[in-house]
Image (cartoon, rainbow, N blue to C red):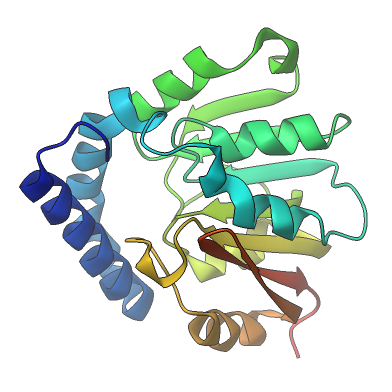
Length: 214
């Protein structure tokens, strides 16, 4: 979190880590953490894009390399300033990309930073990852890049045969991080399978395919 007082940065990272662990364990706690996290990321939005360089995208890029075919509709949940959405748009020139974030300030930055040549295929909007404004099975690739997962919603919006991609820019050191064992445990009952773990740069990624629940 470039430019922040080290004590403030440390406190922000600790809060994100506590919120992630709490909400993954008990999703109902999201109502407690949602407002404070929105305010935190609104406050961080103006400097978020420069916080780290392109090396942070290494695990995302490596996981995208493993997709068997290009997606047609991509959802980037917790898009922030739109880095992952832009990567997907540049890599998949025939895909429609949707980026959502709880922070209105982040979405403003994402729209500002979107290159003109991607504007006809990339849309950003404010939305809560726990209650997404999309129809069931709408996306054949859903990306969470350093984002708290809401597993029921992920299962709802991912199409049959579609891929779910988690990327964590600093692996277990990422403030918003979910271990692979937890992802497997929570996703398998919802019809996800073909789990794949990736390591690249300083980060990690995790892929799963949506199939019918057992």
